[in-house]
Length: 259
Image (cartoon, rainbow, N blue to C red; front, side, top):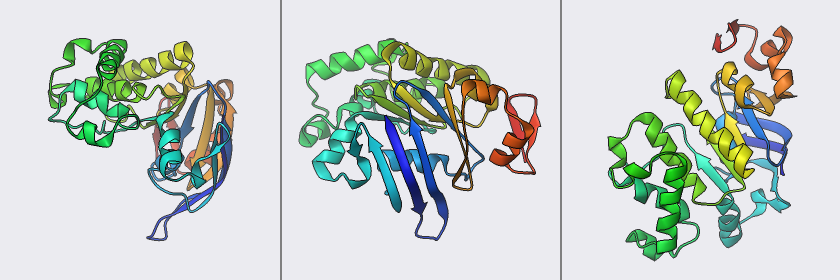
């Protein structure tokens, strides 16, 4: 279980990205974080795996205080938390296989990884991960030769290399068309349902939230303003919608938001 307690992040510019956020992410859930751009979604996810350091508060994962962890302790915690990025974060000139193998960096000798020297066991595992996302035939292609949807599937395979208990997905489909977006979400759903990996994912579109989430968290201007289940979000009231997205936001059908 992931427990977030009074999480606050204030950037050096003075921007308050998160303010006293407290919530719980149940094991095995597919939890989606919603809110407008600038609401604090990405900041929250990046605080969880310490890509950025919180200003205040605690993040407890399986009884371990991530916010207090340092050095080897933090490295071990990060092994169990995979990360998928909006813009893929691949080494574009490297092969797909090399990008996937980078998911094992927390396990191997750093000097060996510099020369791309991974154990055969890891190479076999990387090919297995690529097979899970339907890209085993692309293993030796350069990453920049792949489509956007394929690159994001490489990102999923890379996260799988950690054998994670949880995957953080920061707007994983924001740059993809609707068909590819559902394809990526289906891969994440499969990992959640078949392997029991907890998914914590930030999304914009309510149709995707309603289709894939089991739990939903709403942020607005860095504050927690909504918590609910999939059933709750399917029956989102106009009042709830305004709490999350503001008085100027307008619902268009079920899937889009304007402001």
